[in-house]
Length: 396
Image 1 (cartoon, helix red, strand yellow):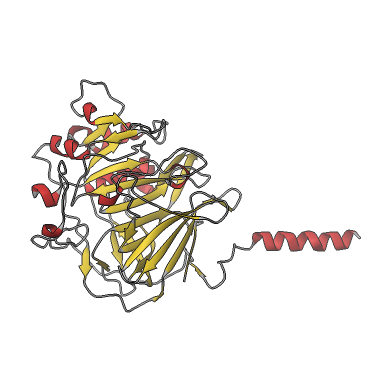
Image 2: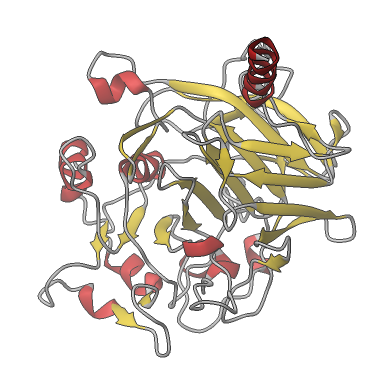
């Protein structure tokens, strides 16, 4: 009897140690696959006159509502990065408060980044072409977000910041010199600060999902002497021909300690051939898919490019992530600042296995195709999912 129990126990341990398999008919991305991509040397991309460096769209074709700012309105290239609530996946949940974002339709780039060891995430909107006068719900920043801001040298809006001894955002801003540039817009300041008036409470929204920001007004407060770096992407009008089929992407954020996926933070990206866009849905307990929408425009967010960027990730405590948009050695003070890893691209209904690298704090993140050259994106908005290697990403 004892021998039978030992055999059963061994089988249980064997099967629980195996990685969770992809859904039927889908492929699970191996984040640690050795792709052997020899990276070619790259520089800064030339900015085309009248063309957006962040979306590749023709600026004259963009319609700006009254009160908006941005490159298409003022001619000044000055990205604005805003921390956005993503509680329960950031959708209008019938069983809870409405936490869906507003101003989302105008974001050039949407980042999803780790927030908690259990698998919760935060959203960051990068605005450049069109900068709205109403965006929210604005929430707090973590250390990796400060490093992401450095990449764009963007105006940065946040409502609170982590100040643990090893993940102190306020001290990191001082260390990086961001405090002296006039580009930081904390919502937790006194009324004496000129931008405080541009943070208001959205009528009908419940705390802490209520903070609205007039991003366009804060854009105008940034000194003219501040010039954001050219971090233009490469774009193409051709659909990708390389890679395998990638018409559906399923992302599950995982609590590493238990190996279980967070229910409300899973998302589906579904490709639509007519629009050449991936539409984002959030998954709930019963498998229901809820469109991820802009609360004001009722527009479902869709992306010409979906990039899954696998990053190193540490936690000094469960709610204190260190997402390495720059190298771990930068944080640990041992010299190296570069960071790199696998990146998977979903464009035009295709999946392309590639790579990414960021040389240092001031550098842009370069995304490479399998040929080692900088990859050309489709024109339009981009979703960048920055996740650790234990995240489950399936596609077909």
